[in-house]
Image (cartoon, rainbow, N blue to C red; front, side, top):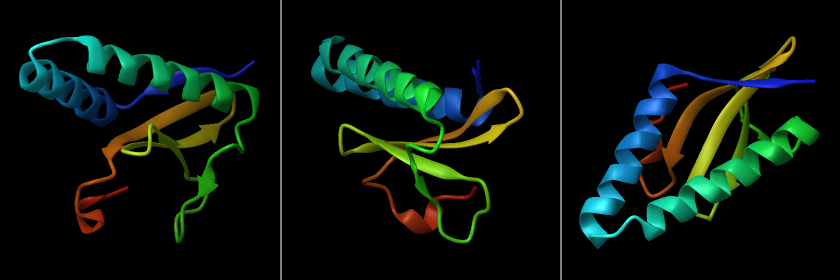
Length: 98
C-alpha cells in the first residue's frame, strides 16, 4: 500500500492558493472544493500511480490535473507517492521548476 508524502514546497503552494481564494471570495467554499478535489485526485493516484500523464523530459514525474486549473506533480518511490508541486495551471509554465 502506497502512502502520500508532500514536499514543503507543495504544501506551501497549496496553502497559498487556498488562502488566496478565501480572501478573494470572502468564503471558504471554493477552497474547500479544491481540497475535496485534491483528496479525490490523491485517491486516484493511490489506486493507480500511473494515472497521471508523464512529464516531458522528467523521468518518473507525473502530472494529474485537478479542476482544470490545478495540477499535482508527483513521483513514486518505493512505498511512497511524493507530491512535488501543487501548481496553478494559469501561471507561466516557464516558472515551473521540478
